[in-house]
Image 1 (tube, rainbow, N blue to C red):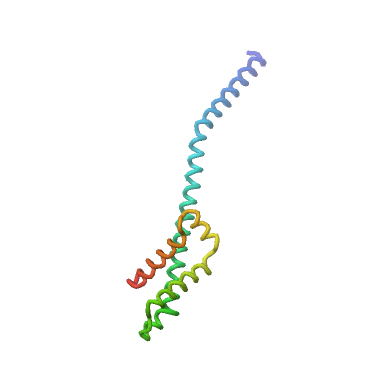
Image 2 (tube, rainbow, N blue to C red):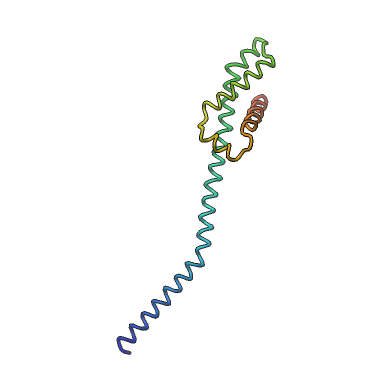
Length: 134
């Protein structure tokens, strides 16, 4: 074999190698994209879980804080009435609004139709849980 033929064979083999590599890459591309999407979903789910944990903990802190500073002293005196329940609820909600990052509320508003009602229910549920000692 002369040098020219050898070079032609080498170029053909390199061309075939590049074609095979391209074909393999094309076959793997959907898999790589799926893996990337899965990673993004995992990060989003983790962020959602952390946000949920944070807001639930914030509500619990607010309820405990309101109980200690407002509700318990009135109950100890036997003076806790319905009007105080409304005040305590309002104080709890104000505490949450003051101490939670506004970005967190925007995050929830984007996924919850009525954020205000959702927060009210979460406070009521946390008050109930606190009474049960959870």
